[in-house]
Length: 79
Image 1 (cartoon, rainbow, N blue to C red):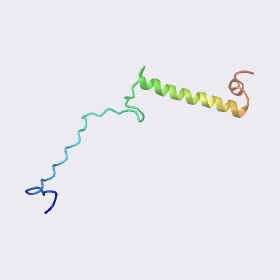
Image 2 (image 1 turned 135 degrees about the horizontal axis):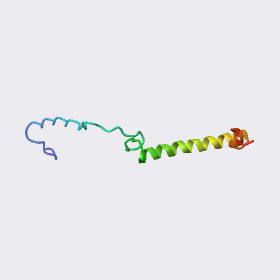
Image 3 (image 1 turned 90 degrees about the vertical axis):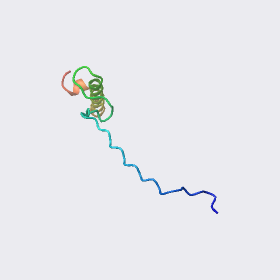
Image 4 (image 1 turned 120 degrees about the vertical axis):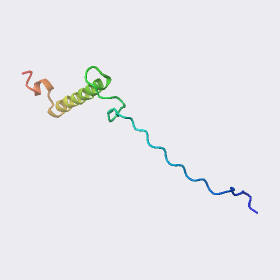
């Protein structure tokens, strides 16, 4: 005789999977955050502006490092 009793009756039929819930109008979010891109003074716009400012600052540092001259002199703004 077995230690584990077998279930009585036929096995239960598997339940149908529930349909996936999809919003009627999905909002397009950013690739890196859940913020919705918006114009004006929004957190998303400020974050993007800050990222471009950081890229510009690094570009100035690279130009100064490679040319061994200040950015203003390199750009011809200071004689």
